[in-house]
Amino acid sequence: MNKTMKRYGWSYLVTATMLFSAPAFVGCNGNDPDPQSPGTGTTPPGSTTTPPGTGTVTNPPGSTTSTPGNSTVVPGTDYIKNAGNLTFLSAAISRAGLEQDLRSGSLTIFAPSDDAFKAAGYASAAAVSAAPAADLKRILQYHVLGSQIDQAAFPTAVNTSYQTTLSDGRLSVYKTSDNVISVNNAKVVQVNIAATNGVIHIIDKVLMPPTVTVLDFAKGNADLSFFAAAVERAGTTVQNSLAANAQNGITVFAPTNAAFKAAGYADEAAVRAANAQTLANLLTYHVLNYRAFSSTFQNGADLVTAQGSSIRTNVSGGKVTILGKGNGTNVANVTTADQVTTNGVVHTIDRVLMP
Image (cartoon, rainbow, N blue to C red; front, top):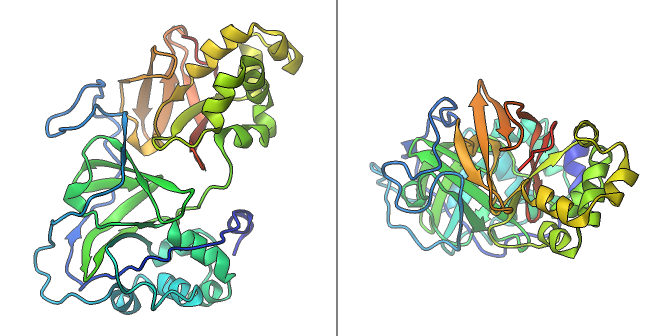
């Protein structure tokens, strides 16, 4: 396992069980949401929930959506063992000692493909089998929901938060259409593989279980020391909001140290000497009250922040920029996206957003 995988220290897994299906399914094309499609912050046709960019919490009900063409339904472990693109996952289940445990219940599995495991640093199925069992238990638990959610049951154009069977782990699902679904920063490439006790959706990345809050993430990042100092100076309300583990989670656009310097803060001492209320107002303007990954941002969408005013997202050629109301035409570039924490997601930006 590579160094990145070792950092996360996975330790426990789902005691629930998961079963899956025969090889008939509905195909997902795996494309990102169209970055050029206009986003207005209003509910698009076909959405019956909340506007794009907002978030909802779901402790999912069962879905009765079926996959056309399925004539034989088998336990999920059997399907995985016989699927040519899930050999690494099969090895992980075996290594974690979950084969018998995963044969009952009603579950949804986001199953990383073999290529996803390779991209995560596992060179082969043998490498998976040599990995610490506790790590594999934790990572597999983070890919499981406690009830069955078929493709049609995911809300459209809403960042929907789902509790996984990892007690401190929630996933965010965003569906642009039936053929374009993301889970955190992974794409769903194959959907609705039915099982006797649930459903499998195959994804193109291994989802890393987070271990720190947004606040601790900032404190541990040398390039965000000005941001961390600003949070400390702003007071307990802001600090608690970045450390709390609310169900919806939060999204934070965290300016780098260079961004704070460009905004007039010469050093950390200058940040700590600033007016606390001014900093609180500024920082909450960088926060959304739900998890939003970069693939969910729409071109031209206005998103209401925790401060109450809106920011505008722009997407072009896969590049995301953010514009504050007080920034004129000077956008902030998202320089590092989709940094997952236990209570949200952090996007590092190169400009302070001005309300």
